[in-house]
Image (cartoon, rainbow, N blue to C red):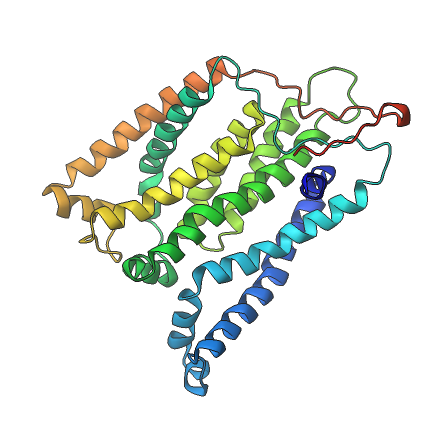
Length: 326
């Protein structure tokens, strides 16, 4: 089983390969997700001629199957990555770069986790004003308004599957492949720093693009830059999965803790409603900025400066041993 799950580490996509993964996600995943949602609606009797002709009712059916739709869409690129990795794993001269090979510098797991927790929450507050410039998509309004009716479905799709699938695809496959390529044709032990920056930025651009709406895309790009940098400095996919989980779950938790929040209103308006003054919103944004800067400074100071684990190793036939780790 371990060998089965180790296949994706043999795939090191470049820019073209990463665009192909995104295409497979949008087209192949979109088709399978639509089919799965309609099949589930048909099985429960929700699918009728009336619902097919009414866009609003059809959208309601699709959003009521949130975890099923998400899983169907994301499993397609995941299978594609596995298939390509499987085809490349038989190349005796190709050294795989592991998806997860943690090096935490002067941190231990718990202090790093606490720091990443507060840093993620702080960055979310710092970036929140960007969301005011773009309307929240209707499907997200429906999700927040109906979370109480299907909490398990919401948590499963938004807080569990999204971090696992998206980090595996964006950081664990695309960024890892680009970072491995940053050592190409270099005789030194250090990667091209320009290509390292490019790997982080490009994977973040795709991270924003895959959300397919401006309300999420721009904050996702900026959060993706932090996730990509943390992944480079730690080579820990679980660190970025944890950060992604915190970011997504905190949004859900806010609506559970404060059910009076209005999904149609901005965060500033909701905070003003809760506290009686809009000034508290900007206090939270300011605190978010201070904590974000302090958190990044601490990570930069105590994490390894120039990790070597993304450098592909030369493999000779006589040296090969089975490797079942991710």
